[in-house]
Length: 482
Image (cartoon, rainbow, N blue to C red; front, top):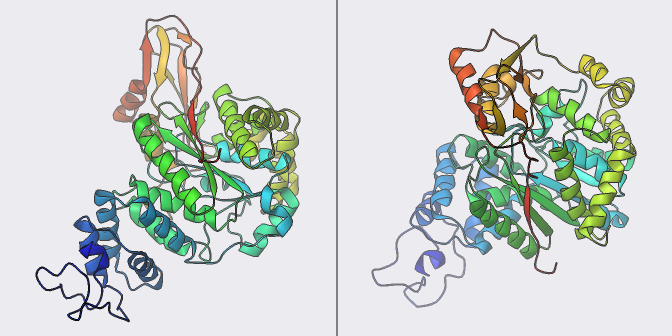
């Protein structure tokens, strides 16, 4: 109580004074905001930050008065001590209000939906889901991110399409939604600037896995979009922020609860991220696989996740009577070409030459590969023994590709957009010794010994009979009214 009520000059209260009041026993009529060192100390010691405290910290981040070391210290204090639901809600709102709010035509209110993922390997769901939802009558103003740690970024993948422009002003976003029904853009300086600063700081201060910081970062970007409904894909497993389903469920419940407290309908899907999603990892290769999914083909696990998340969103926003009905509508958009048509419109609206957009969306897989960045060399790895593919571990695969240039070590570093890997086998498949199981696309010299060993160790073989691979989808956490 004393910690959350203390205000004023930063001088400690008299010993035994737990009232948070002055010597007269009356509240200070004009409390001065606490200084950053005091706020950091309070949270470090397990105290609860008031709304004024949190808003003061966010204001200091945006106006530049907070030093980088102070931002890092506060992030670490929050990571170690946590925040309750009310603190997290206030932080989310303060981040959202740090910049411009998006405004849309009133008629769009129930149509506005979005999806966010906590990050995975081979996760190209957004590239498919946004146009599929647009084909189902939704408006999808997706504000997305770049690669964080070993996970790929949606913006980086789209930028492997020559000419694609992720930098769009808020007023341009409305025109994009009118033309294509969806857009995928970067976080501009006008939108949620405080989160942009904290997001970058989290990556270099080992605070990426903080529940309140993840929640506030995700939901602040979505609050400014004025959504009717949001689905968050919370990954768990060996290549995810959270190693197990229980921890992922805790984040899912926090996201749903904070969303509800701020008037946003949020559903959170728990999905496994031990193996890559789909068969391709790497920026340009993942665009190719997303196009394949929008052809009505592609890997079953990718299609399954797209239709499951899309079905939940259509149901949550009132566009479908049940989740199953919503999933069937999304599947139909993939099969009848309408999702691909929306993707082509989005590409052209965001700067891609219309002829190139058309060729990408109507071409064969071989033709598409000629139109996107390609690595200079390909190298195949062979199965070391007979066995059934039990698992292809996503994390070592992602780390090696990161070393080869598919990911960044520093913000702003250029990527090798053609670098990546194709899985040539499926989980559950029987494999014979010497059979190619992975094709690495690289620009530099041959794989080093340690890189080759790391990749071979990613392949887990067993003696059991072949089996059908499980769906990555585990469960859906819904808002209270649902």
